[in-house]
Image (cartoon, rainbow, N blue to C red):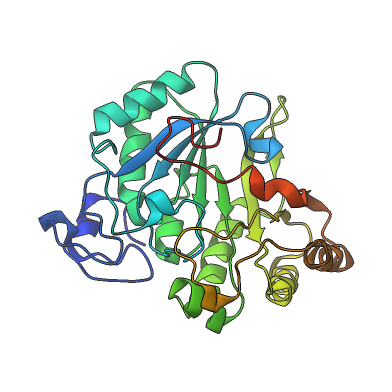
Length: 308
């Protein structure tokens, strides 16, 4: 089990890409990120599931770049590994100050979005916040393409795992995210998350989550059967006690090419097929989205308030 320290940068195997780049010396691997933090945005986000944001919202830290780079990513402005903006934050003091200013208003949840390739930087931010007296509920919002050893090392830092399980099919994962081993890797990481937190979730007196695992899944147009296969695997591996957020917000944008036949939103029939399957499997902790949600989740990261 590796310690989450700067030593990991010297021969980077932090994510399943295992590039072996010496990020400490400025060598860049798949994610094109070195050993400094690269934060695209920090803001109070009110668009998460109710148990995360409630009426106040959650302080979300959006890391730039990604170890998966899905071609349909709604956050493509910041997730493309070839992109860089001069106003992105790379100074720990400034990052911590911005987070602290939001937490100081009474917000008690701190979410790190796309943290896998910057997990060392994430831990450094958490430790700096603790020294300043801040102990928020830490939410690890990941694409689940994580090395299981890293997840093991995060047990003392993370309160809530929020993995986005994307694909069952190896071919689909390769085609859309260049990650043919995705499901095997994601399930290994998820098993560790569930081992740490269990299948139940702990809710505070304010109705917000304190601890647990909440699994997200985005249905892709034309691929409802892949979503159904995922749900069957989750029930078999963990039971129907899991809390699952079934998302309908897919919108064709970013790096999408027409050859993938995904230049449309999902249909009511596609969403209903997956939801009905989940209910037949016994899942009862389900967050469902309205079909028109795709119009509410198209962020603009050139704005200080991307989701408004």
